[in-house]
Length: 285
Ligand code: C2E
Ligand code: MG
Ligand code: MG
Ligand code: MG
Image (cartoon, rainbow, N blue to C red):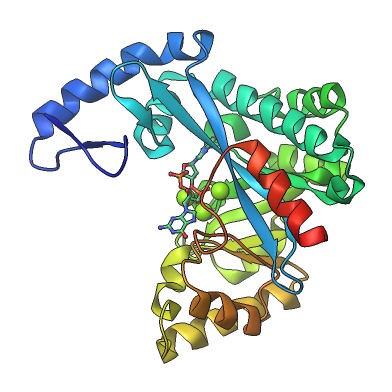
């Protein structure tokens, strides 16, 4: 049995694992044709520069408009797409769309939006795929997008244990000027010396670290830990982004703690690409 929760989001009932297996099965059956049928779409969530409050760009977040279940979030189908291998063509599609969208933001008649960039999430299957570098270069060329306008997000967990061979494609992309961000940072428990070897330019702190700062007074232990992470990142010449900012109190605290960029419902929920443009223009005026 499945129950609807929060708008038209689809959530599996926790108490019924049998139904979950069936639902999982029926979802994975529909996956391959979903790409051909144009059932996927992308929402964009703004990334805000904390120093001046301007929109720096947006993260592309994929959704599936399922013919029966309505809008499904990535947590409900990305694992299936990874198991079935569909993540490679799906991930390439997301990258193509996002690159084209970033170019469209930059091309808008109001020149102020020129600085807008786009972040795209990569799965481990894409990371180890032999054509990652050539595909990405081709996508950028076709879209006419400068490599520095693209940031690829890889989770810390997916990079833990990666050796030099496994890191080579990311390093090549970084050398071309693509930004690489370590997503969900702090949840994977990588050691600090390992961080030095990664071709990443940005740490994206997982939102679990900043939950204790949503309301004043902030949890003092959380503050100390986050302070340490920000200072570590800056020592290593990495930019730090914080995700999951939900309140004004939290936003101000994180700005004072020295984060470079922030993302969260407090600024904007993920939404259609047109909205980002409006936000960016609003802060340019
Ligand atoms: P992520 O990359 O860490 O993305 C951030 C997630 O946090 C998004 O969930 C976003 O909607 C949510 N979020 C943003 N602000 C807030 C906030 O203030 N509070 C709370 N509670 N949540 C917030 P979403 O869209 O459900 O995506 C979940 C994950 O799915 C992403 O986590 C990412 O790992 C993955 N994902 C999304 N799109 C893609 C894709 O195209 N390819 C791959 N491989 N993975 C994707
Ligand atoms: Mg991400
Ligand atoms: Mg994240
Ligand atoms: Mg995540």
